[in-house]
Length: 294
Image (cartoon, rainbow, N blue to C red; front, side):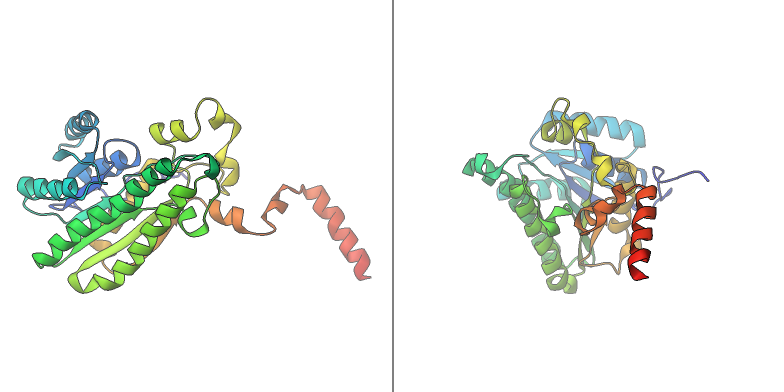
């Protein structure tokens, strides 16, 4: 049977007339989600600090999908810039229906090697940036009494497990997850849904080159850590994101959905390393155990 995991889940106008803001939308997973949102009828605002990259992405995706993309230069760490991004979105499209907090940064490093500034940089982009965008749009939606809106936060599995060597990112993502769950309760009365997605390994050119430069990607084969023995396909994440941004998920609120092929569970189970025992050794162990039983 043919595997369809890398195929689009929706095929028509499931996001028609929706206006969605995607931070960090110029490349990587943000670009993949934007592409699929456009194919489903949404209008999308993409933001980052690099306006040239945004313009190139907008032009590429408009030609590919026939949709409408508004590139807006914005440093999510600066609340005034975020407010201007919201204003530009409303000026262009008249409304905003959804926000995907995707902008991120990360370092792989022993924590004691990081400067306070390096630690702050990740906290500011991930946690402060997500807070700024959520607060600016949340205030707007509440002020105009918009009946429904959706925020999707892209976190990680180590937002709830923690992880050595990416402590600033783990700290920031954990904060974003706590904000997701907290506001899901507080803002539901305003028609605002809050959810999160925790992706496992989904290779992206920029992020993976920074995290694992040179030949490190070959030495650290992440597929060995995933029970399904593969990395994620961008379309799989885009499918999930589109569902959570659509009206089909209207009863899902305050949830974090893990999409990692079982990676974090493989690392969490105390005896999971026993998968390396070959069948013939299991036969010997079983015989020994039965022998002792007699």
